[in-house]
View 1 (cartoon, rainbow, N blue to C red):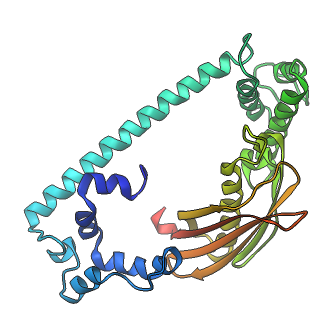
View 2 (view 1 turned 45 degrees about the vertical axis):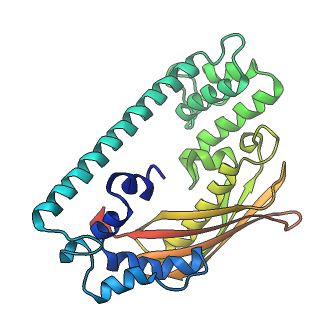
View 3 (view 1 turned 60 degrees about the vertical axis):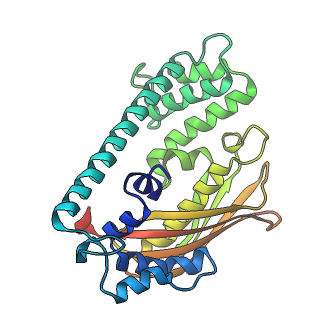
Length: 301
């Protein structure tokens, strides 16, 4: 909610936000989204009635509120100023968290520090070594230099985690799904116009504290599958996730997961998709994710 409508509603209010965005625009979005998100099949009457009266929002001078030119300019300036202040605060928080993460990495192998922090530090070293070269030591090849020595000194379980991190770093330079995809051995099996199938091998890196695949890893697999299905339909345009809804149904501790994505609707600007994740061995349903992608044209950056 911090990055979506919640923040705008808190700053401008829900009805003023509708006016500023355009009531007619919101009604068109509702035509696409409501059947997928609820039992409603059409925009609510309080939108369509205002559209019929020519009250489309601030752009027509009236919507839920009346918008004289001076008042509109002041409202836009006030909204933008508060949104920018909130974004600056977010950046400051991220910078502080990043600095804290670096301090954790430097203490990763101090006595009494948990192995998970050690794995994080090794992942950082692994990213620098994904081409087989450690910049600090100048050593070539796997298992050499500081990262390799550190791995050898870890207990067996943590050594397996760190080894997978090194593999992921190499995968980041070779695979389509980057460092995160390498952590969980994620790869595409099939990607066609409107459909995609991805698989993910369950590795220790993907497990939560209870020994099951972490929900964030399941969602990441589903999101990658939706991206793989959406991109071939758009050439050089850039479909990006607008919203997604996840239903967690089951889980696994080991084995392989299959994510199958199908396109439910494809418009000029919005693509609606559904991904189902199943256990490859039993075909048991693990997760269903429905998502909407927004298509950014090249001239929009």
